[in-house]
Each structure stands twice: as C-alpha cells, then as structure tokens.
Length: 195
Ligand code: RP5
Image (cartoon, rainbow, N blue to C red):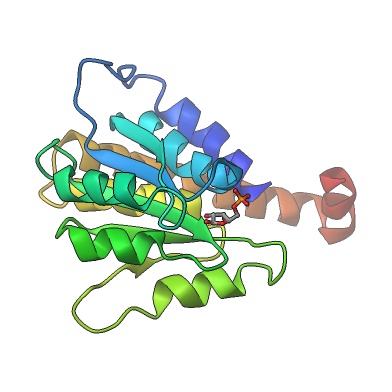
C-alpha cells in the first residue's frame, strides 16, 4: 500500500521527466537470481525509470548460470554501468559473488524466501567478509535499493539530485496531508475510510 502510494505521487511529481531513451546506455543494472525474484526487484526498476535513470534488467544465477554471472560482473564497468542492484533469495550468493568480481557498488536485496521468509536471504547477503562490501537493504526492499542507486549516481548533484529532492518533497507532503485529514476526521472515521 505504502509503496504503491509513493509510486503514484512520484509519478505525478515526475510527469515532466523525459521518458527513458533506449539509445542511452544503462547506468544501473538490476539483476536477480531467478525470474521468481522479479516482483521484489520491479520497484527498483520502476523508481529508477521514473527518476530518468536508464536500467538494464537481467536474470543471472550464481548457482545455475555462474559463468554468465562472472562475464556480466567482469565487464559491467566497461559496459558503462555505475551501480548494480542484485536480488536473490535463499542461499543468496549473487550479490556477494558479483561484488567480488567488480569494484562497482553493489546493493543487495534479500528476497522473501518460501521456507524461511527471507531471513536466510538477508543473512546470506548482509554477512559479507571484510573487504568485499554489499550495501544490503531490507527483505523485499527493492524500492529503497533503486533509490539508493539513484542517490549514488546523484552524489555530485545535477538534475537527478533535483528529482530525488522532489521525490522526498512528495513523501513529506503526503504525510502532512494524511496528518491533517486524521485530525479532521478523528481516528475512528479515518480508519473506516482506509478500508
Ligand atoms: C535463488 O533461488 C533465487 O534468487 C530465488 O530467490 C531462489 C528460488 O529460485 P526459483 O526456484 O524460484 O527459480 O537463486
């Protein structure tokens, strides 16, 4: 609910942004261990596209397609990529293995697994040995992974930084208007209108 609301407000805020140009080389890759991970990673893809960042989306498994994963990671910087968002579930080695093969920043997204609800994914991704960092977001945290990737790209300011400011402003305004409505209606009626 919160995610779709923030998307709606972002879409409004970004309505003046140019649509992604297919000729522009992707600066962010959103990769995942299986297509079953896509629902957790799609929020990263969407928020990046709404912010005007070109994205490449791939399925690359550390276990099922290890050689393709190695080729991707070793050539990522040469291809023009600047940040990699990597999601995986269970024995989630993809973010760590990719981080071992490139010095680009890697943001790991633990995917909610069926057996252990994503705690296995979280521990697999977050507990990296010293020297090979993976910036890990929450279980199912695709949206924040996309935003963090955009913030890394916007570290020196520019249009993308301004669009991120606008995104924050929209989040602020949403909460302020909800607070005003809560005070206006009272908590019982507010809750009823949420159903
Ligand atoms: C991991 O195994 C993937 O990242 C996925 O989360 C999990 C299950 O994959 P599927 O069996 O659904 O393809 O490598």
